[in-house]
Length: 68
Image 1 (cartoon, rainbow, N blue to C red):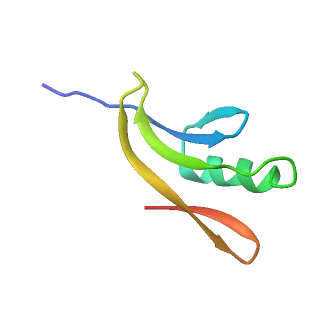
Image 2: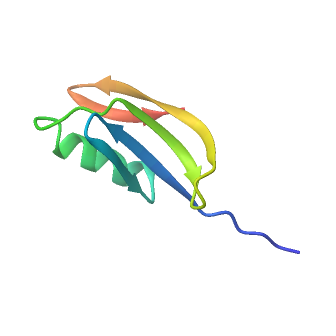
């Protein structure tokens, strides 16, 4: 039997959370909106809301990247 687990990347801001399909999509959003608000946490969760694992931010050349 095959079971597919769909995941999403959640980025938490002081004003709320945003969800994204991929890390790259999340990074692009974060870096495009850095002047407005900086993220405080990031993690991967299943679409049913079950948290799988935490990720971390790394800054390089003025851009934020999401790393394990």
